[in-house]
Length: 172
Image (cartoon, rainbow, N blue to C red; front, top):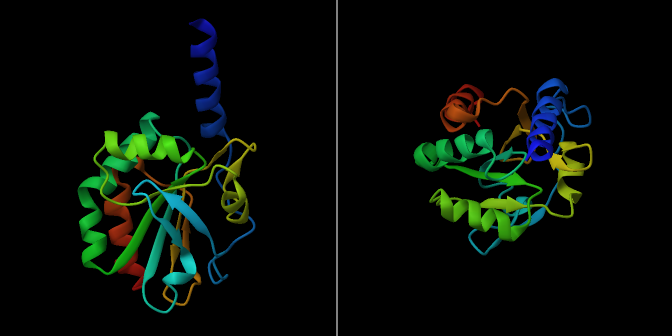
């Protein structure tokens, strides 16, 4: 019990104290293409949206953790606003597909939660933390496939509402 609590506390401290920067990618860069499996049983490819829709890709560290649960609940409650704006949005993590399916069902998430268990896409987006899990970072990708904005300061409880505001500001 003590070991489990110590491990959880250490994980939290590392995530809180480590700067959440994405040095490799910057606004204006072409977003790396990907194809990932999703909680809804489909696979999604970023390039399928290029020329048609802007995409928001919200990386999160671990399904069922407190912050990630809050973030998913925000998307579940307010994601329809993004749909009304014509924005395609995904949450993504390095969790297994089995775990993201369970997470989506537990929170009644009616949107795709992407799984990157091999960590190849999270490496391309430079969000992989200590080789274990993704950082909490949101990428705003315009219709041309360029990164319009990278949010390293995501507030899990209001993530979807904040994204609606930022998409409006960016006019993507």
